[in-house]
Length: 190
Image (cartoon, rainbow, N blue to C red; front, side, top):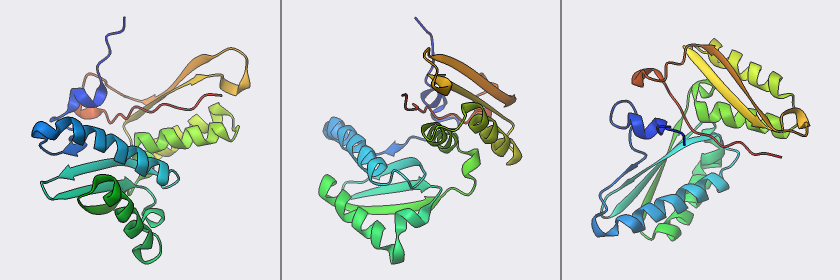
């Protein structure tokens, strides 16, 4: 039995904010279920927009969704047409007044989820996993990261037996709460 601590839950209130900000009261379970549905819908609808995180804030009369993305132009569309359409679709799912904010990630090479998704996309395109991981490590370290650690697992290189390989550069102190920016990512397998 592994004794693993969830990296975001362990750091909540220290250097990681909550991804949902609201008080539910008796509607708590409804709000959690609705948050999950909204996040899944946005991630599916904007799958190629480089979404890093989706933050949801609620008041009694308003729902505010902030989408952090590396490609805001895809989310917004020409003249804000796509974001208006997304707002209407979300309003149908939640049935209260909805506001959608789009915030740009200036350095996507420093965001762990985006780096992981980039590596996953390259693996899907049958690019050598070593080359994809080493390019990602070089790009991240060039942008000024103190360290990076990547673990790829599965049928690497198309071989019959599954295995796991770890790559790292710099320092990644897991016990130092303020030093680590970590996002859990599940990569697709063949």
